[in-house]
Length: 544
Image (tube, rainbow, N blue to C red; front, side, top):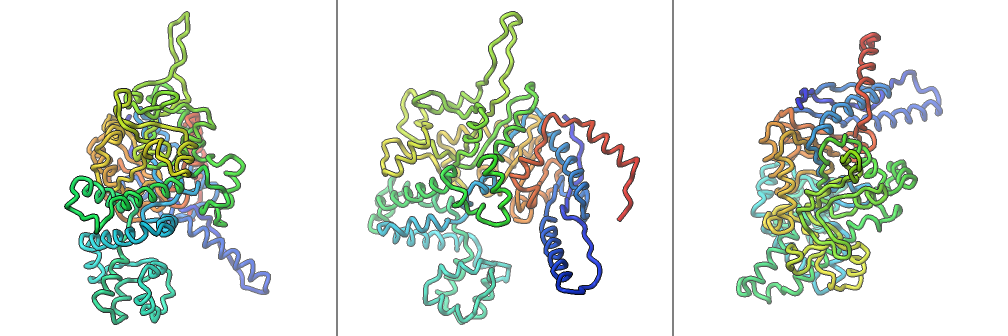
């Protein structure tokens, strides 16, 4: 299928409002202030962009409500062309579960640190290893040189609280009131010794949870392989194992979104999200996931099944499938003991053939589902001839009970963050799952929708970059900040490749808006767009 190269659709969703007249009384002043606030809200929404090859189709235009709907229809029609390809794939990251109460684990969340500090046996070990990690990153990241050269290195003001009391008191003289603080300014405006400067430099280092956990696994592996390499006096391997276990348990509790109530959901606590909260209460917690699946299953049956890949541990899609009555092929077989068999991904579901015609018809409500980083309800036990991978899928209730009672008779929970250490994804079952991911993207006319993933996983990125070597491959990114984050998404946009499409902003880059408003339904007739275009030609708008 040949696709026309579209220019970038950068959309300002704000209405163009003008205000005239002078303030005559308090009433008019209140109205004026209200209008100003509305304008500020509208301006905030102007970060919505739809990039194709880095070009700009409509730039800096204030769209009225009718125009917004018209451009939304055009975007839907644009995306529909890709959804009708034979090889359609989706990759989901944390951004697709934020509204469910999930949290980003780019840095070590406060609730995990709290869990660690409650355990006196491992608290000291955690602090020591965290310091060693920061020292290693300080040498390898180049953050020190960046700060010294005057490069912008801003941190949130509350990160100052991580410093020792003596240095923290010294910095109080600064009277830091800004939300973000420039580290170079702190160093230059205070008489700090070299040790204190090193502590300030460390503040610029992001201690990523995934990378830190990999660091702990690497230490544990080295100690297991060579007792003389790291002494037990320096690091107690039993305490190290306990630290890893506590972190994994805390990750489990963070990702067990079905147990997060509406009142405890940090996202829904914000007043600006009340409408979303009401919708979820009315239509169900997984309404946006259900909307996505419903649209996806409307693809014609003559096309291959769409593949859903996710880096999330949570069970959002599983719960949504249950509520919609959708079968999903996730690599497991069995009933009482569901074990991992990757050949299952080659299976499919069909209705029995008609006895007279001998024909079979494929069942519509089926998806293929791949959890690249593991899942809350996966456990590892010893391999055997019946399960060479040693991987089992068990009810989530059993996992909760197991963790609550601190038992390990069910096996080890398979949630392994793999942001930077590729070695872990080269082991079973991850090697099989990533091989499937790479294989789907390498096939002709493949399209990958990346939703809520910020390109922080090195191994995943490598596979996507390899796919871009395929001339018929298309990459569509749906991300809240998108190019605003800098990093890989901006770098991809700067390539000016027409096969790279980026949806970004508070609406276009949001999973909820994407699933409810942008994802086209397959019964949407192209003739509607043709009629709309004809009317526009007959009744052209006056230029602003």
